[in-house]
Image (tube, rainbow, N blue to C red; front, side, top):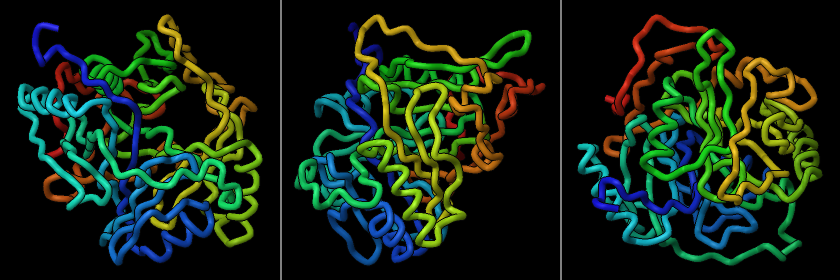
Length: 347
């Protein structure tokens, strides 16, 4: 490449998410005692969690705050030089960023935090403190048997713009996509990846920036069924939002649940491999009855409308959201003009 602005940072995968929660004890009971996340470290204001296959300090952070929101979404990069490459990219784009480390987030090495052009609080890092690998500690494989983080799903008002940011600047590849079915079809949702699975990031049309859900891999389909039984038995019936079911797009078996603050979590298993360099993205029709669920069961209205607000990496205040510029969640065309360049939506 001729310059730093044309180089693509080597992002390995989606690495962790920070949820702001209002009651740390209730959140601990939900994530640890019910879902079976492993506690790596905790104090009065924060709990660091990981899955059974995680070899690093955390894949989920629960931070006590007055209001529920998303503190940040993190991606791991392959080399420390990728952090400098990203810093130069943000400088050239006149995007403000800051450096972070273990003093701010336990277990973390040198890291860069930025409010990305879509308004999301994003962290990039390479090094993190290692933790005990529990892959063969079958005595710890209880409840849902959370293995590892898999992906994040985001509501954005302009999916083509957001997709271009991830593919053109961050080097993500498309595995699947959905278009509207009007006279002039437009991109409604896209599934983008860095690791060779279905996705690390999904982008859906909706009021944003908001985080729709964080997806975690479980060992097998029975893990999801067992977890649904446990949730119902422990009084979390209203937290079971959607499923169990099988996705029409990725073919994965799923269960969507809501934590005590309303943050959405997907338990997910049955991914496919997308490692071939000539992989051709799969296209799905927006109104295909088997798109949402292979068995034809539609998602509830809350799944299309509700999501977690995100915060500023500088002030921790809630970021202002914007309605879709081109179309509503249902795909109807709006009269607003389309944005043709990157712009931070959060001010």
